Length: 116
Length: 113
Image (tube, chains in turn brown, purple):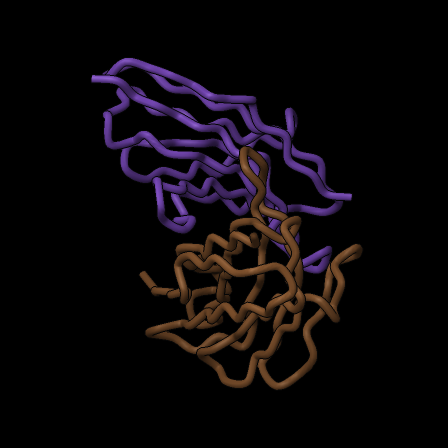
């Protein structure tokens, strides 16, 4: 199946700094990518839908100025957590939609963010 | 709005035991239904899916049948293995509706030898 990678797999940062997470579709082009947040023992919460070449669509309650999303190419989307605080600590997962594969979403392995 | 409810975990079974993880849904329109599996330290993988009522999805010995009358999509496996230990997520997708995957909370399965 199609492969989606995320980098880094884990990151620790100080409060107030910004962190960038990359999501890449390795063997297919993805016009649409999704960013999720997963809390311990909870489900995935969709944060935003990222469309190549246009602005991301954020879910209600997600601060777009805090979680900056850029989808500059058909294989790369980035999520930047700006001025991170401890409450932003979480597991962030991206997925990419493969239109050739009937629109199936393929998920990355996730990025563990810890803000001290 | 659309929602998915799946049984609370964790579920602990012995090898070769029968597995059922219940999943029910609420949706406007006619959703496609999915089961995803997340192995430790990995991302989500599609396990199986069904796109219309009475469809049965199956993969790796797992099965689930799309039951419209009971709005359910229960996951079953006749004989689990230690390697099946993972978190299982039920999800739905409604094209023309929210066009988003909506996930249940996940059920952690541990299979002991």
